[in-house]
Image (cartoon, rainbow, N blue to C red):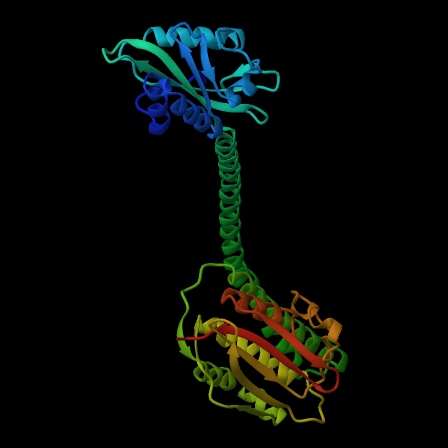
Length: 408
């Protein structure tokens, strides 16, 4: 990038006007003192040179920048400025027939070498040559305005660097999203395969195991019957695991937008689906008036059903389950639900671990399950931007707490 030459009027009207005063009020002693004081205090370097670039006057900022001596008047600017820059300036000024303001942009490195591309450590400046004309329009001299724009250029450079970094990160994200879409496509295929190719033969095995378990044959003894029963139980458990895996995987797929739903409607459906366990356990489930929430109804139905199902499952055989469902306002536009039971409880240090997939705290012979129930619940709650956690005490009971969006 070379030096940028801009032809046109500057917005530094005050300075130009002050320079033109050299021909007028500067003749008066008081006016000259006021003008010099003004030019020494402004944050811009100012230098007054004749047509041959010999110094008539300059302020301290210019002197410091080009390391000019205090008594530099009458010397030529070429003695202090890089010859390459002087050559470009002279060539440009020579072609300025319209006597317009000419501006240059460039920088100086640490060793005062001119550079025309910004880099960290470069001092960037904008130089403007303002022609001073006589009343007849003849060129008398130039006023050079030297503005240090290093801070602005540094910010501009950093913005470009940040934009490039952001673009690079966006491309990486696009690549990751593309890979994720491909992985989801494979997951869909797996779900279809698991739904048909795994479940269908499993049903056949389960069916034959049931026939064998109920077979009345003298050659089919008690040991054979126990093995058939065990096979039937294992195939049933495998079928449940496949269903839970499919549910867990499908939660990552695109779902319908949440809609306002009455919570009591969802809870009633969950209790209806669990009515056999409720009657078998002689459980008492209590809940008061519940609010309307904005959710994906089928997912939240599974959420309540899984948690209520656990409350029914994890109880001592001698104790009838007492389950209470309550709600209260939460921070933001959310509602906090609590499902409390009088079950066996869990150790406090296990309350976070229990939400991980395939985590089981009990032997599957004691309590059936796949270890995916609460992992599914966590995904459902997080899909709705909520939180879920457990408060529990062994042999006292468990409270499962979670937040869901409240309908306005």
